[in-house]
Image 1 (spheres, one colour):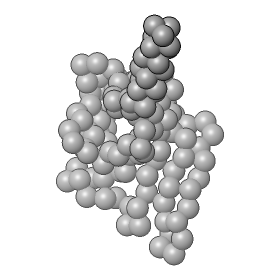
Image 2: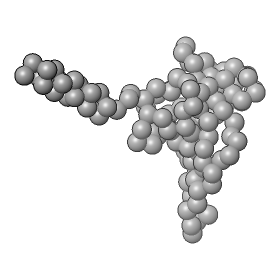
Image 3: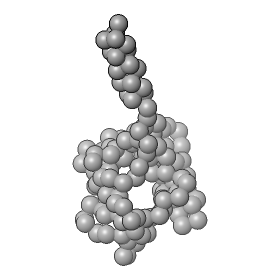
Image 4: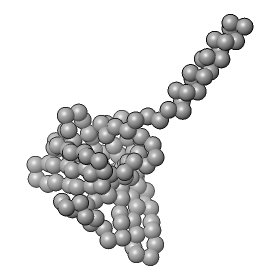
Length: 126
């Protein structure tokens, strides 16, 4: 009876650990895997085979695919990247799991750049 109780407890603990979602963290290396958009009449998705990776580190450091270091600010659904010669602004969304995110380009006033919508979906690779 004692063995059955121990096995039962282990099964419950194992099942509860698997059912918990991982918390999202921006920290890590991200690779674009697809882009979405619209031409006004049709929505489309394009797979990205060899996209430019971007790495987010602690202390708000961001590193682009050319190893340029910059700073990032992440608040709510807004992401602001600042490099020496350029800045980027995005609306940020998670794709229902902690290993994917979607970035929608916006201007400095956080207004959408694409009239019909456009996004790049990133997958965490590290």
